[in-house]
Image (cartoon, rainbow, N blue to C red; front, top):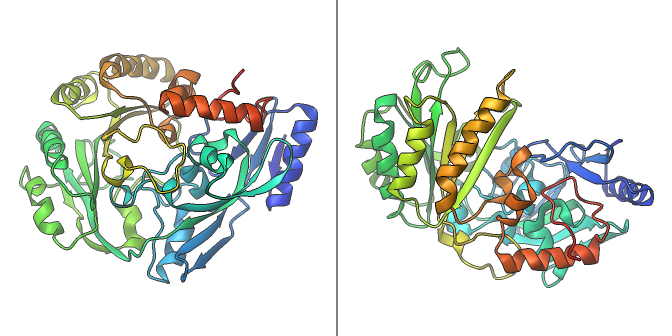
Length: 411
């Protein structure tokens, strides 16, 4: 059964209905990252719940469960503020926040979850609750995603940002290894105001892509800097090689979605991610050998620098895991007809090469078949996972909310 919820009361009635019949519950906003099919269960779609309220005095936004960042960003900008949004404006805001929220300003301001002030949620007993800092449920929701109820809305802090220095540097195939090594060493020296990443992308030779990139295995360096000396700071990267495209410059935050320039259309893909305390040269060489230019198999590689404020404990604690990670590495393969088996083999080889140096996983980057119990557990420190499992036993002992990145209730 699918419930198209138009408001919080619809969600409450749906959960009550499911609990009374023993139906597992899944919740979906945009569909991005849904880990399991809801066969035999009840799926709550929240995409109709699109209310946003900006409080410029308190510097907060109230967002309902169906809101995407592309709606919040311009409304906040009218008051000289910005949310700690993700790289794509099309991402669902609430689910992003509940998984932590790795965005364009997180090295300066921390995870998006660190700025939540209140959460409205329907728990497994069919109760609508408002939870605030200091409660165990508040701690568990922020980092525990959909395991403890269906969040119908939340209040989150905004930051006084209207502009940043950002964009993309694109380099040709023969420079990929040099650019990746330069970014790796450069990223270890930058201030917290700099949030950056790099993607290695085999670009199809089709008209939907810019002509300068078609048919190339490009390196795309993404820059988001909150400072006045961006030109000086980025110069070492520009000096590595000529750019195919260079869009880095001053921009309003309302244009921040152009930095990663991710495709707005749905696609099927398989993705693997790893967190690292440091990004060593051996890890980089393994990636290039397996999925770099000239490798037998093609895949997109995305490496994000973490650290900075993300590694510091927030004033109001939450359950976001693996805060000590300094980098995340993701490998993504598009799935076409008949490709699934070969893609699974490739990602198995990537996992074999990187697992031994990885410090864990990031929950928001676990998709589909990778959202296994083992991978979900690896997204938290052991003591955090044990506490979450104990709270799951308290708030959802029958594991009604299990069609997700599931944390089973403790015995």
